[in-house]
Length: 342
Ligand code: SF4
Image 1 (cartoon, helix red, strand yellow):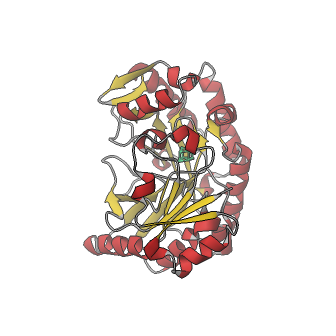
Image 2 (tube, helix red, strand yellow):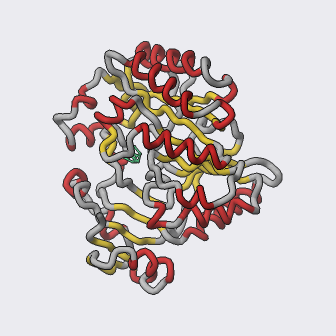
């Protein structure tokens, strides 16, 4: 799958980097000083690179954990996010990462301890209060877990920090490290879901909805709390039927007790990112949807968005208590965030 690996010189001899390199014995290995030399140059062709992305093994020196946008969260007061990876092995046509980054290569920051150190500093600032950390903003949190090994490190970190809550957001079925560990109430595995026909059309290379549901069931059987993320909602002429069917499918596999939280969110994307997507995929029907520009973001028209959100909220209440349903949407106003990947 990965044929080229760039690695920062300083990391070359570290056991962690060597463990990852050993998984790709035939890949070309190229040393670099900083990942930005490869990842940041302008005029790279994201669409072309996406056909054969390289892995870049790097370290992150600052801004490991950042405050989440206002209104983003699942009931907690203190909300932060972190990205130990940039980019994703999947290829969702609505993914804002395509608009945000110059490169489709995967960057893996392997200095996990620095991320945990930052989380500890934040926990110290909120002594005896619950703090939420969201992963999955700039990547899929689990898709490359067999390579990164991040989840096992995270589990070790969270074991002794009961007021630290983490959401791992994913479309992946790479759940082995979770299944091996005892369940934790402060680690939520949140699956992004779309109706099957929508996923088949726009979520390229992702596990099918059926496979995601199987993974959720396995985790729930072990006692892991599950999150459901219906975000972004994608419109089409059979929107109501598709989402009604999806909710029925999900809740035929999972019971309300398995579910930690449900979030729903409308499609939203900063205008410059959207323009870049249109340039990359001019033939993509999704990008020709009747969107509007509102407060700097490309979205569905306000009335249409309201109908979609209200329909889903109403339908979900047939299955799960209202206090488990969250949204960054407050009657036409969006949180400042674009759709969180994944
Ligand atoms: S939306 Fe999420 S799963 Fe899809 S490509 Fe982007 S990061 Fe990956």
